[in-house]
Length: 467
Image (tube, rainbow, N blue to C red):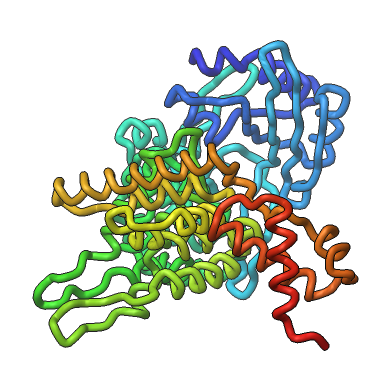
């Protein structure tokens, strides 16, 4: 009730507008659930018997901003600014949704009662409402009991619920990850039986749920549910594929369990909140192993170049899930680089090799540090401590070189304009080759004086075949 009292000035204000117009308004769904859990934020969800155009009319003139991008699905959005902060509000007409089995788009029809609306909600813990402004509690499906028991059940049968919207199966995994709840046995059974139905849902909606799951407090719990029910076979098949059968001598780790542990260890290293790029890279860093596994003649198991193969697989999967190009590039780059540190050995890298490590990682360097440290899951404490010390040494060398050379912004001593002027060239491939040569010299030998760079440029140019 304290949570509800905190938002009551805004909630009651809008509720009275609806009441005066002869409509019913209720706080609903995740807002009620989160209020009961003591974690209600400033995003408020309401439901009403008013139709979308009536909602628009009632919020205009009251809200500080209004948007109708979801009006086709019966939802109007608004923002209300107060002394306590801004509230983001969604008001949705009582409705029911169902998927045509041959369509990716839900068919929306409006209802006339809150009870009819609540039965179409995904889980009972999201099927509670508080009538406003009177604050009557509506809980026809005993969601409060399930909230106390930390159980995920569906208001209707799981089969009906998941048939109406198959994405609810992924939401079950997401809520398990966010709330640390357990899905009821009948929910798990329906998810397992109906997993293939997720394929009619658009990649964008699947991606959005996967992101929420990964950014939750307990993502491994949600991921295990996706794998165990078979949903991952359709949305992220590279993850269950990591469950390689062990060789008879058990000479390689369980890659699936290793990857989940790396994810948890990467999360423990986050310093500025959940990092989707880091978490995706940690989860996917070894997905190239199944395709590269070889049993050697001496009984060892190898995964040569799995980081290169894994980067390509990461890029392909993320594109199929409609991730942005920027996110695809960042995650696949981290997957490609995650083994580079192991060439450092006992610290034998030259300064040139350290420069290349930093330059190749670019703005992803801090994430690469975290991913590399997380990738150590050995139970041998002595070995783990040695690896940590070695990486400490590499980071110290990077820090020293950065201070000495401004390593983050490595550039040759000459830019493209100077190269063209010195060699009498126009813009073209030759300028790019010259710049690349000077950059290689910079990486190999460190900073160069201007005159030395000019001399090196002329020496290189003299050795080039002249057309």
